[in-house]
Length: 165
Image (cartoon, rainbow, N blue to C red; front, side, top):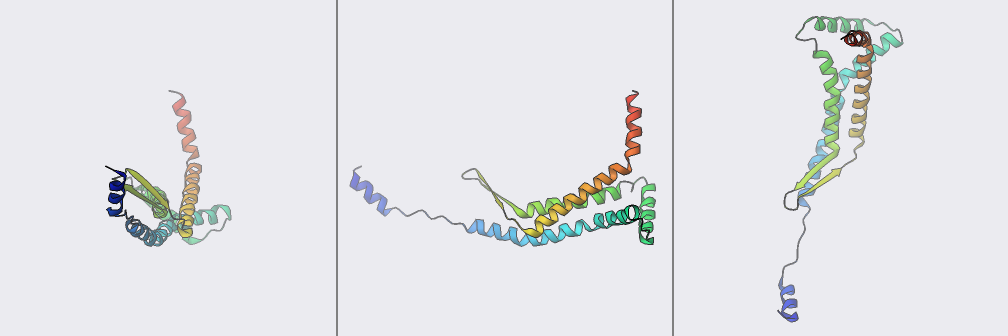
């Protein structure tokens, strides 16, 4: 093949065309779901926040409202049932965890191109999603500290008996 033939072949070839329509569509879907997931995240942390607010008002500020006692009695009744004993801690723990996961997925978007074996990660920093993520993480942290402090005596008692074996 001569140089002239090669140049003529290059001139007749079609030019490559790159489209980003798929990426734009996927990013648009991510952005529209981000607002909904932040609202769901806020909704999932309302019950743990109310619980922690009640505990804070009662034990830290010594403000004894009748509503807090009603909730405590209701939770005590649930704890007496062996099948529902883990329901309240599970709800108060899973809510913030699911809220964190939803909001983390809302700000991140993953695309795997099978042809080129590439993984593209796009991050869209949405303030409502970031706030919901960090509030969920904070609520979960405070709730876990609360659980540890409430069950410290039982954990200490368990640890002392396990040393004897």
